[in-house]
Image 1 (spheres, rainbow over the protein chains, first blue to last red):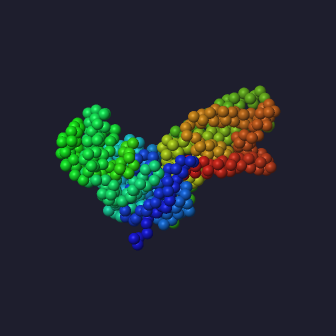
Image 2: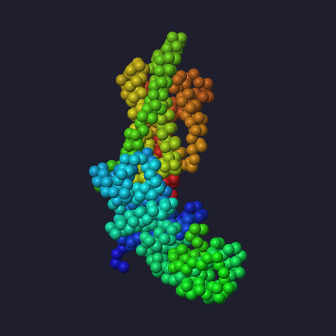
Image 3: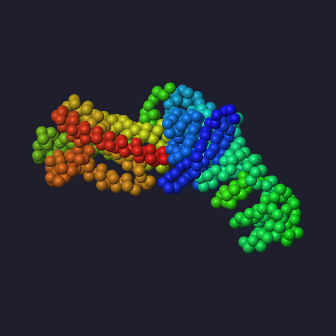
Length: 310
Length: 258
């Protein structure tokens, strides 16, 4: 290993009264990595991020960020990280430019330094022409990009992104992903939470899957799919609600693992085309058949028995 | 490396917002009290002076000017400490943005109170200048009425901002204005001496922070400072600030860093 981790959590726990939001998780993030917490809403991702961001005290267990203890050196850690929160908390009383200026001042950066960086950052997130506008009329995607620019004003070694593209349209998401790639290439360590499997697959070198406050799996997206799912998935949709259940015994004969969801049936197999081709012979007549590669969504389903959207 | 204390970085944000919005606040923090001063001090005061002569040796304008100074300091403080705190913790969440940086929750609270003090210092100075022009400030000691008004404002801002951070909605805020701020405004020796009040209420007025503020401002503008009384009033107001500050650093931490 050699290189000490940038973030390290041991038995990390967060309780709110009797509710356990984060339940003794173990993880570490290496410098330069893009690391993800993937899980459905309420899995404990945001609580974990708030502990890493040194705004929420650790209930029990250990956490070290940049080699320091958040309980002791919270302000020193916060000085060296950037945070893009889930909820938009841009300063609506100020212009785009002044949002960056004032945020830089919270870090006690000299104004001349902030001006120089703010100029570069607005170019980086493609908001230069909106510099003197108020933030209220900006689109969702622009606000997100401004939040990322704001989080970079102190040139952080570590950037925390909580649900960076939730609620954005596809074009806005891709633009933001592109900017995050570019940061990664510059050597910034990214830690993000998401409940989008495609986001995790696109951005993360390594991730943990969280469910109900616990980590249920850890690895690169490819490793996780290899370890916990099959190469292919056959998705079957049926006309009636009863049809999947009557098809189930015959699907089971294929010898593959079968998952019945509300709206479809999934058959996990090494060879999707063979399973799809054999359906007719088995007397299964779905309304539609889709053969696709496994995704992290399938991993999540396999591990928790639920879909990410639940 | 760090040169500006975190509390002042929060003040800087407020000051920058104020640079854009100051025109709106001129009306509530300066023009309204000046209109009161004209109506009560000059208009009503003329009538009172004609019929009754002076209150404790003071013409009515001189009596009411420091009362209005302290009372408008209180009102500015109350207005600044309720809804703007809700905006910071809930509506716009600017406070949450601050605590993600080296600025801590108690710095946010402290900065907010310090900024309220700065604002009141500005509006109190302007009001005092107008009162002096109208002839309502006979003593040069009157300058000290500005810090007295600031202390009075802080005595309200500190506990009110602390309270506001405990709330999830603003439903209690109008009640505070109606049930606390307005009665205090009327019955804390602002418009008439508390000695005119029935005995029970007179005792109650002694626990009104505004009464202490009014007495301090009046001692300054009329130049009749009794050291013992002044120390008593300063101590009472400082006590409110200290208690509020103790509470506020806790409620802000609970709200912003849980």
